[in-house]
Length: 166
Image 1 (cartoon, rainbow, N blue to C red):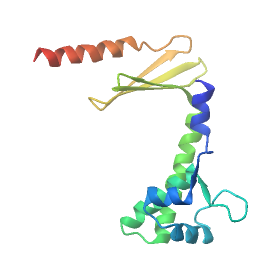
Image 2 (image 1 turned 120 degrees about the vertical axis):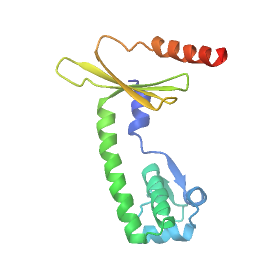
Image 3 (image 1 turned 180 degrees about the horizontal axis):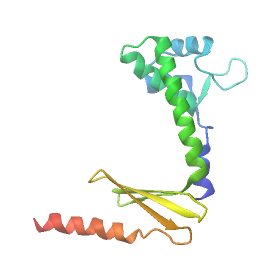
Image 4 (image 1 turned 90 degrees about the vertical axis):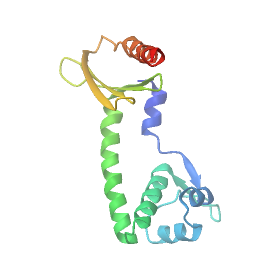
């Protein structure tokens, strides 16, 4: 996997200002400051009197809390539910950032996630999701053997031909 892609998966350095976060999540800046005072969210340390900035994980947490509040949960329960989901996402991210070899999208239809090596023989697991059929397909290949993306391209052109014949 390229260093750029790995950096995107692992990077939390995107910063969003309080005004942008307020607009994105439909939450007043006052409420965001209140949540920060209560320790629910944390802004990035800035110079005194500088506008507050928030990292991407905080933006996601605010969005989740807002969604749970809109569903009728209390603030305390919304924070609890958001923290639980964030913890799960953190573990998923940790696993994927270590195992993710490649991510490929073919013809805006197939998403191929390559993980590995998955065993002592250095096999790579390719998980293929078809957006049209909503099915998953798995293929385990030796590390030195790359996945045949052309067979998916052929499948896409074959499907287009079938539709045109009708």
